[in-house]
Length: 142
Image (cartoon, one colour):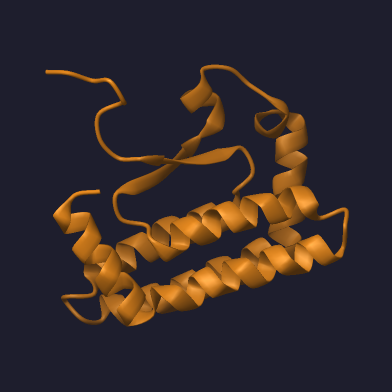
């Protein structure tokens, strides 16, 4: 992680990013308690880490990242996303949207508001997504 993403991540945590990461952890914990929600909990815990430190990483389709479809990127993944949306996705997205509006009201908060908007979209449809670092692939040489 470079110096700019590190600085942005520190400011993100200080100015409220930690609260939405905690929201993702709570959603994951509630899913684990139901036992049948464990697949959704795994996605929630992964995204909690992303919500805690979002700069320098991005979410993308797992099928595009891997180069092939799997269980979470096909029809089962779509059904899983619909269940997620009804149970937890809408309130996590609403939380991210609310914080984005507050942070966008200040000029300096616009990069953080943009990160919250990306997380709000991810909150609605997280199954079949993977969090990857931004930058050249490993082993890339110029």
